[in-house]
View 1 (cartoon, chains in turn green, yellow):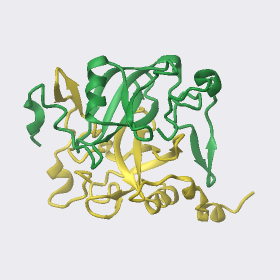
View 2 (cartoon, one colour):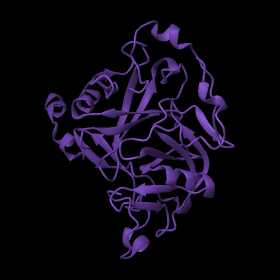
View 3 (tube, chains in turn yellow, brown):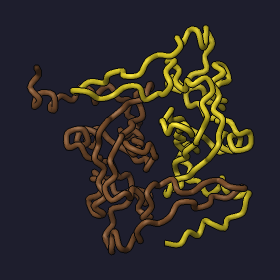
Length: 145
Length: 145
């Protein structure tokens, strides 16, 4: 199958993305070394542009209605080594180095710490650092981001 | 020990999920062995219930407005070994065995075959099998699913 998108100029790459009605796409963050899926958050065009430019993950916080530089409060930045796009142009994949080894606001490595077992969601991954220790009273939040 | 049938019939775990306004959540499929991210599609409660019950990925096709049993046309089913939920209860992660080694409707292993390089989305992963060979004239589609 031909890929007509292969020759698109360098200023157009953001325009190839099929943003949803709110101007957002899901972005999956994957540990570049281990392959672990760390989290999924949302991006608008500006956050993706900044992510590419700065080499660090910048999301769009739907709950706070503003750009969310991952790690701005926690120090748990995500250094981006690769940005990928899916076949439908509506999902982004980031390969990252997770600073501090903690992506989740609960203090766990990954946000996907619950597993369906016998009809129940069971927490199977450890808290590496207490959220109070990470955030104090400050909010960074991917809690309901 | 609980009756396995009773466990399978339980659906209260579905109620813990924060479905969006359309009754959907994103579901990421990850190769259970290699850690590769294969695709992201959408699920409603029924598709997730069936995925858990049948042990094979069932998504919700937004474009076709119906359940989409992954591999129903292509034979490229996803056998599910693990179902995970994120901290916000609004994203599902499936760990799967990808039958035929091809998740993408373009005939590639993963839908995330384009990489941002010098301001261009560049296809970096090979087509393993031509889509015509996989689908003929039939549509299964995660093309704009």
